[in-house]
Length: 316
Image 1 (spheres, rainbow, N blue to C red):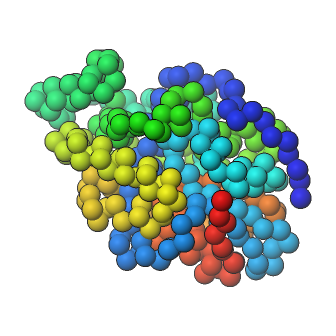
Image 2: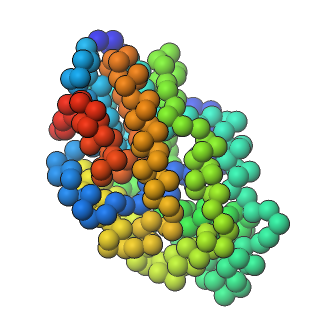
Image 3: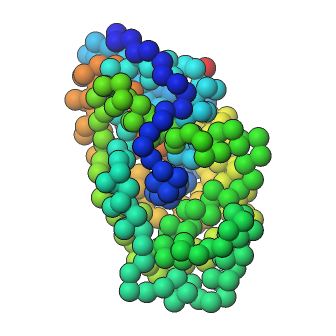
């Protein structure tokens, strides 16, 4: 098994604050959606890290469920995760974000041919401006140029972080980005499960009118929206996959953000599973994807088991 020396907990990478802001806008919506309550009961073990072995594999690999808003400093709380990451021969992530991708993402998030006021109306725009300024201390300003789905995702990060500020203070990298960039700096291979174009289309390719409806719903229920956001983080820290999966039963469209779950979860999980056998045969892979991709009938845990692999939780 390949041994890799630990690097500083926070990787210094050539990404600006604006780059990371765009990254958050992409990945927040990719995390906050649930499964049905029947699926939520399928995974009862409270673990974010799962070992994949058997089925002819010479070495085990590990699947880790991430939360896209938590930064790499949170890995200090998960030494068993860091150990598997540091010792892995290869790293697998949803998509690899570089400077060129950031530029493409930025363009795909911008409104063209219409305005935010036209989409959500003057009254809701004023409400949004007040929420934004109250939570950030800055005016909405140029953010009015973003598509409604972008703003819905950003609102989710406005919950009271309180004791979580050490892991959400803007000083580190999002965990997903950290895994990929740090591995590349170490010369380890990094595999991307899908393209940035696919993710952009899933999140921001829906009709603007539908995006506007969800943004207006979020504005009208902002207190409940932010309560849900904090509850999601608390469930993640408790490593309660089942609890996270059940949020859509509790919060409805606020949790799913009006997104098509078949496209966001089932189809993507099925596509990823087509790649898994070849990746796992390489041995000792560390696979990091959004936590809610692990659960449910098409989630990676059950899908890998259905293919004959032994998938077991790894505890801290």
